[in-house]
Image 1 (spheres, rainbow, N blue to C red):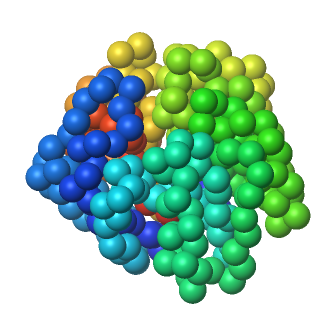
Image 2 (tube, rainbow, N blue to C red; image 1 turned 120 degrees about the vertical axis):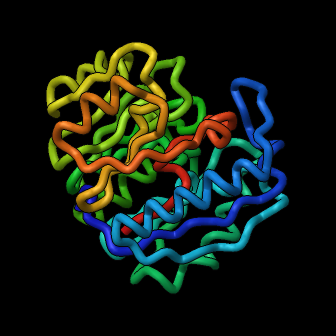
Image 3 (cartoon, rainbow, N blue to C red; image 1 turned 180 degrees about the horizontal axis):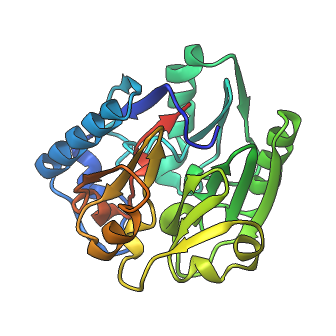
Length: 255
């Protein structure tokens, strides 16, 4: 459940991504994003997934990040409620694009919650409260997940981290890769095995385990050294996409 997948939904890049939300106030170049995204798609295929491509949405600059408006669990999909006004309309489009891929579709209609704040490890979900996910949205999502048979914990994301998963990712059914900031969270320390990356390697903490592969952002030497001992790595350069605060997990929905 944690990392065994057969399918992925990925959206083609839009030229308007240069106007995407960026805490660094940076503007990625569309042509470079296209190249990085193409390599990302190849890596997902190499990991063994069937890819379902969605058309680009020029009116939504951040719409390449399909994980934020939805979350999958077993054969179900839950349409979320993104916080930022420039992203909120994505949910109304994606719900029609993906409905035929899943047995059931559910909706979070109150509060705000984004997929970047949702970590699924086995049949358990951790929802991080952040600037993009509030308590009401987290509780509404939690209620749906519990009805579907999952367990849920709602945690506080460190204040200087955009999304809960910006600096953590699942490696195994009981192991989470974390930055030094995320390693300090009591709930994670008490309940999971943590592999902590050194300061300066935070960008590698949003890696993506798919089947027997671990997709790792390129350029993080220490992270590669640590993880290559136990995982079959596929390195991907996403430095241009990272200009709009993105990581590996947010560019696909997997089930």
